[in-house]
Amino acid sequence: MKSPILLNGKAISEQIRNRISQELKKMDPTGSSPPTLATILVGNNPASETYVNMKVKACASVGMLSKYVRLPEETTTEQLLNEIHLLNQDPKVHGILLQHPVPHQIDERLCFDSILPEKDVDGVTTTSFGRLAMGKEAFFPCTPYGMILLLQEFGISIAGKHAVVVGRSPILGKPMAIMLTNLDATVTLCHSKTQNLPELIAQADIVVGAVGKPEFIKASWIKEGAVLLDAGYNAGNVGDIEISIAKEKASYFTPVPGGVGPMTIAVLLLQTLYSYQSKFSPVLTSH
Image (tube, rainbow, N blue to C red; front, side, top):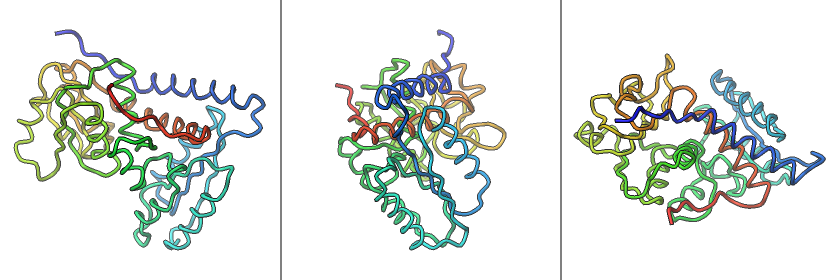
């Protein structure tokens, strides 16, 4: 068997960022009216603050502006909805990102769904999910779309392959399963109630770890030549797949960190660019 190929998300994300930067220079040579991504952070979650700061820096790196809306821990659902409404109405704001999680007193789903679909560059609304499921243009959840772009950038065939997705969250596992289905893979979506998980994974040409449990997917379950996409990031810099051993059996694999994470932010910037251009991400199809 050939040596496994590392799916270097950091390198591919840099290429995407460079393309975004070049496109913006063509559209707005003077830099007088760049796209703006608004990020809302509610409360004092240190991990969320780190993520938001990364996104602010990423915007600046490609020539986009950031609007950082910081709200106190005790913010109510109504107050947050009002902030989102103001951003929806602001013609200078092209994308809106509500940082997850929000404090417990807030109806997070209601707030997500109040974001206009044309500004939902994080792909979190039920409208965006429905459009994805129906094979329409939409803004897609950033992490699964980042994994799809990674497969496409490396020329990895998806059509006709058996993909096993472990994890069914509405912004990761479920949309990844739909995207792979739209690209003509045969998909098995697994979760905490799935029986015979090792046997199912042993059949997979593509394995997606999206369960949020460190090294939950064991190397012994992986078949020779499988493509391994690990969307997990757990304490100790480990993902959801036992990648240190499993990579030896793989044809392609994503490292943790440096695989899926950088692609997530690159997609956020890409979809903000699309919003600025008054369009959605293109329909996913293998035809």
